Image (tube, chains in turn green, red):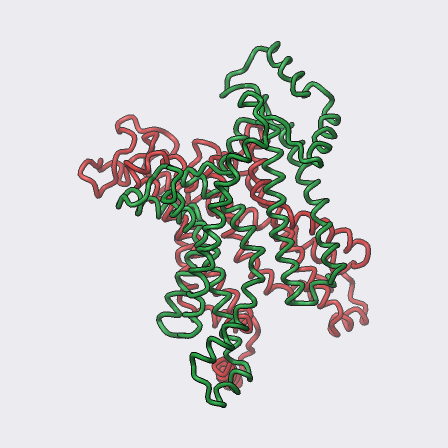
Amino acid sequence: MASFLIRRTLWIIPVLWLVATLTFFLMQMTPGSPFDAKGEKIPESLRASFNAKYGLDRPLFQQYLNYLGNAVQFDWGVSYQESDRPVSDFFKERAPVSFRLGVYAFLVAIVVGIPLGVLAALRQNTWVDYLSLFLATAAYTIPSFVLGIFALALFAVKIEIFPVLWNDDFKSYILPSLILGLGSAAFIARLTRASILEIVRQDYIRTARAKGLTKQAITVRHVFRAGLIPIVTILGPLLAALVTGTLIIEQVFGVPGIGTLYLESIIARDYPLIMATTLIYAFAVAIGNLLVDIAYGFVDPRVKAA
Amino acid sequence: MTVAKTEQLTSLKQAAGTNKPRGLWSDAWRRLKKNRMALLGAAWILFMAFIAIFAPVLAPHDPDVAAMDALPYTPPFWSDQSDPRYILGTDTAARDELSRLLYGARVSMLVGFVPVTIITLLGVSVGILSGWLGGRWDNLIMRLVDVIYAFPALLFFIILQVAFRDRWIGQLLGGLVLLFGALAIFAWVDMARLVRGQVLSLKEKEFVEAARAVGTPTRRILWRHILPNSLAPIIVSIAFGVPSAILAEATLSFIGLGVQAPTASWGSMVDDSFGAIQSTPEFVLMPAILIALIMLAFTFLGDGVRDALDPQMSK
């Protein structure tokens, strides 16, 4: 197990390197220059001085090595757009917003998903079961930005309970967190249901029933304890889903987080900011995937051999 | 479990009675026909495919050209200020909403099926090759697959779109060609992994060994024995690959990095009207509802196909 863990963790390095390299060269291939503000070209002489200032006049390969070297030391440089503001400054401002959103969404996923799954399992093949299964399928299938639009149209436009525009108060967080967490909640609900249904069929549950334990005692002491273990295995995909999910959800609700920063920097062609955000996203997704593989490795020993 | 057993028994009895051979496929087809949600999904997909094919005939106006005789955001027919010539109203640029929705079905269907065809051809070939050859080749291919698998796909789509959308390749078919390529580059990996696993277990089976022993050429073994026996999981994978491609296009178009303006796609239509969600939410909702419905239809069909081909997996 230890060697599998180490091997799997080290595997993140080539992936991140490839992400960094591809991003670097693809951004270089993008037509236009980061200094052409909003479609208007700037004079050639000004551009040359900007290029010299940020080292963009050096040979491409040297720029690439510079960038890799700095990235390894977590030195992200300064932004091109906002008068040389350090990239790390942007993160200090934006990351807490996305992080808070992610934590709330995580809570939604757990608080909605587990009870829904348990309820469906305990009332298997009744309308409660079918309804929760249908809701879970819908929440999991319909794209989060579409669900977000439905929520916005209903709860912010039709009945004005929530703000349409971002206010940076707790109320602004509610709808985006709910929508972001809903897909994961559906996933958790399905998993919980399947896992509990499997436990209920086990012999030791029959034994517990045979020796006269009450239904509540069996459910709480035996079924829940064993049935909720597999939920741990989805923390990884949950993290990955929340990370990439914020990118889109932030667009729907106008949340000024990392996702919005990422798209802004791409449109402004702010290379240092793009590089940093891409790597941070890639790192978060890689950690999510790592957790998935580790979890599966624990559950299914065959994975290790692959 | 017991239900499945009795079902198996009755099907065996029926088979004995009619002397009709019952294979995996006819059994699967019978199970699929009983799944009402899957049939409903299939019907909706067929309806959308019909609309996609006949969009030029069905659309009352040019979807990409602003109406000269109507204002932007002319409301749909249920409003008092509606215009009978534009049943569902006009969008932010005074283009006919109905025509754009019809043409949007075209984009979704194309994006659903074209990349998946590439993915299947590429993934199945690589998977068979990797699994059959084994050894060093297998190792090399699988390491490549691992790297691509771990790649954050959405980020890559975004960067790829930014890098190429203003070049000639990004302009082909309103940006669709670039989307096809971007989607296919990533998703073949899943298919390759799946097929490789199948081939690895199949090539140890006795019937393959027998075929080899009687001197059947490799190509024939792959084509007549390995491929048909891996078909079920391939089909299930295709059934889920189509909606994920549709989702990717809708998402990218929603953030403005999908199809090129003025091409109508449901995702880009949501994006176009999104700024006016407070005053005219219906123009955001119409394409959004169509996206939700097509995703639901494909998921129900996919679930049905999976349950039909692999009864053990369904509970």
